[in-house]
Length: 292
Image (tube, rainbow, N blue to C red; front, top):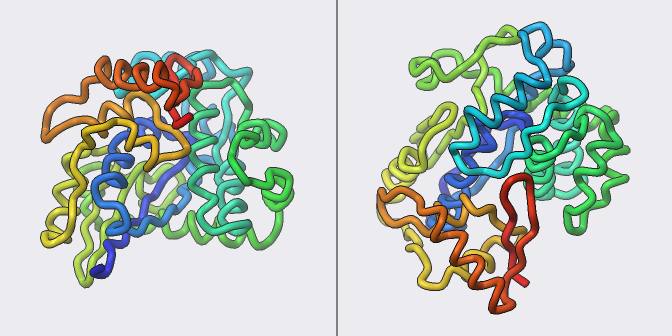
């Protein structure tokens, strides 16, 4: 196989735009597989909850925002007000700790924390809450991850991530108004994606539709392979054993530039459940579908 496209994802578990982009990323992973080599860089949007409070964030306003602004993108939400506003730095450190514990584990930890962020009222800047959110991650030593959060190794790696995420000055996303300067340097907003192949570097800043990413990849690997929509939706659950939300299934079953058909996606998954080949686990106002 030719050299894969290096994909750097600048992200943060507490960003609702990043959460809403998950169906697009699942589509890229399905279509291009090992032709994309993914790397996760944690932005660290806020080190302390007070930073959000100072910007006017409230538990009620945040919950209303999830319901009014982001539910339309289809990912599961459970928009109940938290006891207080929550910063993202400690959860980001937990993800870095998982990466250092076992390379690749950061992805499942990131996803678990996203689900907890947007479907529960857990205070995810507290270790007990982070641990609760991670209990279902297969094979993860939750105690080891939580115990490593305050180690020098994790802090050093996390600060490297934060520094790298704050190198967006003069970038295409800055031209598009998709960067931020909330803590000084020009940083990438979540989810920003950098695609690199050979000497070519292309950047998709902030939230983008799946078509934007697909055009970039197709231009970088015009002789590559692009997996089509499967005839049997059960193949999706084989490819993603950790499970898929309804909107992710809908995006994966979408042909061309058609709009995702969420109703048909749910019906397809329900048929698999009825056959005994899939399970449905409630999550917020939706569900995660997985192979039985």
